Amino acid sequence: MQRIVMVALLAGALAGFVAFALHIWQTTPLILHAETYGSGEASHDHEIAAGAKSKARAHAHEDKEGWPAQGFERNAYLLLADVVTALGFSFLLVGAMALSGRAIDWQKGIIWGLCGYVVFYVTPTLGMAPELPGMVGGELAERQTWWLATVAAALMAMGLLFFANGLLWKSVAALLLVAPHAIGAPHPVMEPGNVPAELA
Image 1 (tube, helix red, strand yellow):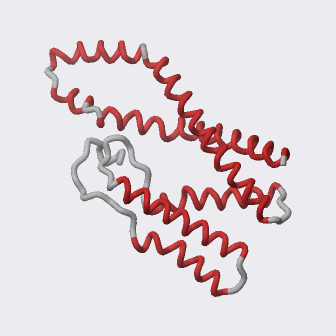
Image 2: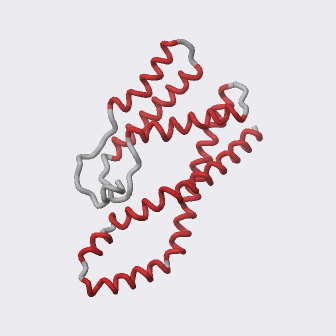
Image 3: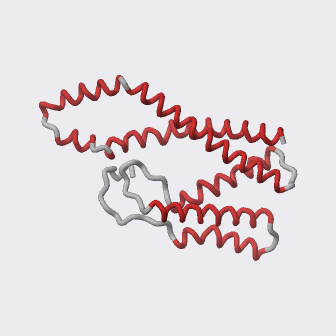
């Protein structure tokens, strides 16, 4: 039991730091850029008069000087969220491997981890990509229901693919993977938003 807990802690912490690095590298710049449109700052900059632009630049420079404190706090919360989330998934994964009763080495552990990545990230994202601040989104309850149904279907499909024998069960697994996307994720009525098309 102690070994299972230690493996889950180490794997979760490592995965959390990797996720944090990827978020800082790819996701955070997009979010910060999109937030300027969501708050209306970008459109305001185009509407102010030429004489007021110098004051706006000076004010922006002052905000930029105060940004490191805000950036540190924001990144600290992001790191905490990534590590805690990764630890949760790690305990679920290690627990599932232990309950399977099968011998698990590091190679099979990687396969299990990749399957979890497909179930909880790849499959839902194919039908419903994450949204930036300022983007028009669908109804939250409908989106959550579709996400949960898609994850549940993918989880059952993975179980059938790896633990069930026979062509029939493999076919059922394929149907489970396709069904949520055939039904389609809830999307909003297309309305103009604050975020430009190149960011959306």
